[in-house]
Length: 146
Image 1: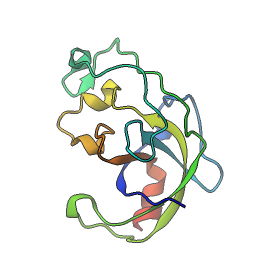
Image 2 (image 1 turned 45 degrees about the horizontal axis):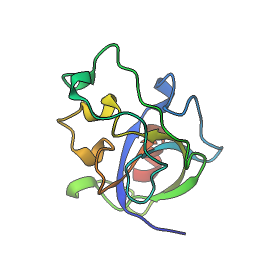
Image 3 (image 1 turned 90 degrees about the vertical axis):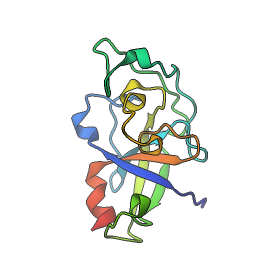
């Protein structure tokens, strides 16, 4: 099994009406996750579109924004995620806790919901080519940090 390091963020997939790939849920015993489409080691392929700051209204997309289309490259793949500690030295519990996630979506750097958040570091919004980024369903947070 390959091992990679990266940054995990957490998202409430249940509140979204759709993911980039369409409505999905994880396999029983797994958590859903979206992988950064420009992550160096775990990307499922590049999404259509481009970064265009004219699509931003502050930290959010304009009302008429249409998200990009993404390939389904590694959708369905399962990955083991292990808590290696807090981001940038922040304190967090559950070091060495592991969960299994199923890739159900892409986290596109070319999505205005990501690139408009300029106050958030690039590696926390799937916009860094140097970081493996995974946006995991928030229901996994307690299992990783508890």
